[in-house]
Length: 194
Length: 93
Image (cartoon, rainbow over the protein chains, first blue to last red):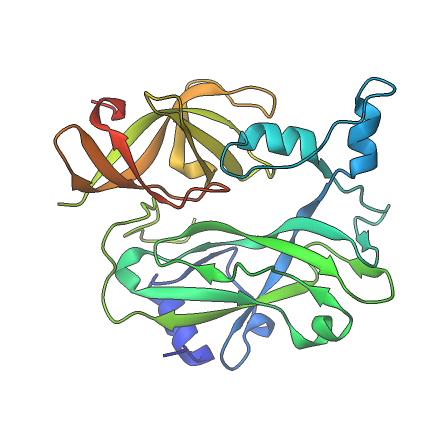
């Protein structure tokens, strides 16, 4: 069952859904909660840039095996921060892929029996902006900022303003039972939102 | 059966300030990575992007065998999921 805005607010009140910082009223849709874009974006280094790091005349074959790559090495070698404009906004050019996080931190305590899906927003989709690539599930027990895999399929550069732009929406669903196992969260049973 | 535990691991900064990478190295040399929120790891020194530091990862034990335990990690790596089997000796006593 998908939670309505009334049920989402009740769940937040009961600490079954913890959103930090707490959402503004305008972020609630009838059956979803809009989340804002975080302050940083990262892009993957291009093949051309990687080749430039190699000695002149060396053209290494670059293939990534997710099963063996060191995640730290991946971040260091293949990701770099996207430079913001003077006003702090980012320009996402057509056919460009970047990674970001939601501004809000989400915690879904296991006992709440609530999971969620992150989805795009139709207005942004009409401009060609995809905000997640095949990874919408926010598991019951999750705690953290939600990763966004963004791609501009449109014809025009898009200006993305951190914290201002409602970049995605979360759809909350109730599970039939409390799941086995636990993604441990320090927010379980807390009295107040920190 | 479920209980909370800490696993000895190496920790580095993640891509974002709120993220950490936890690396668990198994006896056969295989490595398990988890990209987790920073609240799920403990380290004595601040990790950075260019090096790992020793630390502990908060996990849940959901099953136990003679020499190994099944754990749920608070995040996923690129290839592994969040539920993995590790030797018992990697657990913090």
